[in-house]
Image (cartoon, rainbow, N blue to C red):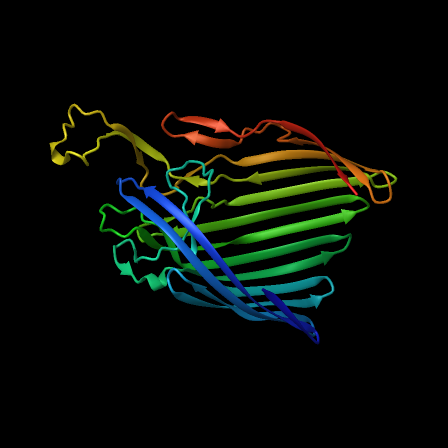
Length: 371
């Protein structure tokens, strides 16, 4: 439920949100220790925000309060954002706030390429840091504070530029305990981290020509108490360039192109292989000299120290609009994905040391009818 109350030169926004989730997890780490979780949770959220125009300032101030039912904890989160119209061509903005989250990622460090993103709710049990020290479950929500600064520029010749540096500090993160060796060890691990970088975007429009580009420079770090490592989604450079041209007497033709470039995501490298013999049934009486074990993998002790190859791709598109009647039209689309057949990695098999690439050049044709 969301509500608006209008004021002179502003408005008040407030609301309430209730959501329920169920998540299930079964995970086995390198020590053959299993972690399981089947959990239902109900979360309550309420917010209050004042949006106000004061001379050259636009100010939003408020707060959000969250209650996470599975751990019985409240999270008060103040928020503030401001924009200064310093000049008809220059706007300066600043935003900050505290945030919480009751979901944690279930990605595995064993994957070279992460194809699946799973999430589970925060644990309703004690968690530990790298030394094994337990923390009360009331602290099991993930917490962070964000600070973002920005400048918007409206330059001559229809050029718009937006620059935003940012910093985010995560003083409480939760991960599956990769160090668990015994059943008595905690299932989940307490971590911390930060993320910082710079986002730049530029746009230009003129007589049917549209150009748009973005560039991101980013660093993301997590700390588990033993080492600092980049998470699987850490990408240093990312660029998107879009160009489109609309032409024809009725402006019913359009050609466009999109090029995306990104440096490689991190992954944990392979150190070697060994024969993994199961001692769980016979214990020290296991005949390890004659038993046939499974193939085990020795992973690098440095988490995500390797980097995948860079990714880039060009997509081309053509569109023609046929106006049949006043309110009916047909839109014909033709496109080519991965126009120069870039071999971007899709999957890598550690054991066989084989690589599978993403799709090659893919042409497509389609149409849509609307009235």
